[in-house]
Amino acid sequence: MEDKNISHGLWAATATGKPELASLQGEHKTEVAIIGGGYTGLSAALHLSLAGTSSILLEANDVGFGGAGRNVGLVNAGLWLMPEDVIKLVGTAHGPTLIDVLGASPDLVYGIIEKYKIPCEPWRHGTLHCADSMTGYKALQQREKQWQERGADVRLLEKDEAAQKIGSKAYFGALLDKRAGTVQPLAYAYGLAGAALSEGATLYNQSPVISLVKEWGFWRLKTHQGSVLAKSVILAVQGYPEAAFADQINTLVPFNYFQFATKPLPPAILETVLPGKNGAWDTNLILSSYRLDAMGRLIIGSVGNVENVAWSLNKAWAKRSIQKVFPQIGKVDFEHGWYGRIAMTPNHIPRFHVLGDNLAMVSGYNGRGIGPGTVFGKLLATYMMGGSPDTIPLPVSEIKPVFMRSLQGLFYEAGSRMYHLVQRRI
Ligand SMILES: Cc1cc2nc3c(=O)[nH]c(=O)nc-3n(C[C@H](O)[C@H](O)[C@H](O)COP(=O)(O)OP(=O)(O)OC[C@H]3O[C@@H](n4cnc5c(N)ncnc54)[C@H](O)[C@@H]3O)c2cc1C
Image (cartoon, rainbow, N blue to C red; front, side, top):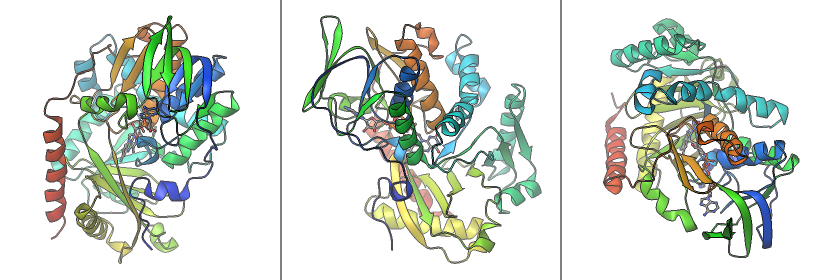
């Protein structure tokens, strides 16, 4: 039977380790208040506790409600942009450190998973960026060159080797990135919460921050039934801002991404579909992603949502795509379909905002937040414990609304629907 949970789909159905958390009641005091229980906020709470600094995290819903509980689960190394483009856009003061820190972010993620024994299906077998055209292949050659110059463990696979690793002859080659891997993303968020709790952090669910004001040199955060007085505040609401921060949605380009998960594949077929359990995505402008979960379900994703008519349109595309790319699967039956909102910035670089004394945020991970969220949470913790703004390898920028954001959102949604209506029909 098809699961009707279109927000968290497969991940909600299979994640274990969900922490039991109360909502905030009454008045509290702490060193650092954290708003938002995704990877950024949870990693900040964990690293503050490890350094002996008290923190209280307030989550509007349940931890993992935002992008953390809906994503593909690719633990990528670095941003979408190639290293040289990152340096052009960020500058030489921060660019090289940003590339190094995010390139190494899977080490931090898998290190935490190992240390706290987080049951989140962690596979670190590398990811495959698959060329769906010769132009895509040439772009991957550039990526390989730029990353290898920086000592990264990446290698471009020719068509035949790529076909073996992907389990499909549909691609022209693929860039294997051995630094990266996959996780069950919601289970990783639950595990980060468990790790933070075990180190002494205080976390609350169902506690949306409805106001944030300065009071005698401290920050006062109010929820419906309680309040927190804190020296510093980390704002970690990313693509799911609510209540006091609802307007921040205007600073992000609206961009949805959906996924469908098959029933577990039979063992003989599973040996031929991503046999090395690599996560994969392609070079198409409207990209497709593929990965397996621990039960052997194949999860396919692409740009768009699955609300109303988009459900059947995108489901039909997902079925056709699997049949085209992995014909050995034969009949395709889906168990789950869901989507989420990716926090995109116009130039694909995350933003660092200092919003007042001891109040800061990093956002806009552009669909690459598992590594960056974990890293920036840790760095924001260091910054709030007295580090300089240079702790964060990004220039400080002002919050600016995105020009014609609704139109841009419509453009992505309508464009991807048109594309999914016609693609892979012949
Ligand atoms: C469909 C999809 C696919 C993606 N695929 C990948 C991928 O494969 N690999 C990857 O690395 N990244 C991926 N990402 C990106 C990644 O999920 C995000 O970058 C990451 O979740 C950001 O973490 P975060 O903690 O900053 O924010 P979030 O996980 O979005 O958490 C923000 C939290 O803030 C809470 N909040 C909001 N307002 C308030 C308030 N007023 N008070 C209290 N709490 C509040 C929300 O409820 C939410 O839980 C994807 C994202 C989506 C949506």
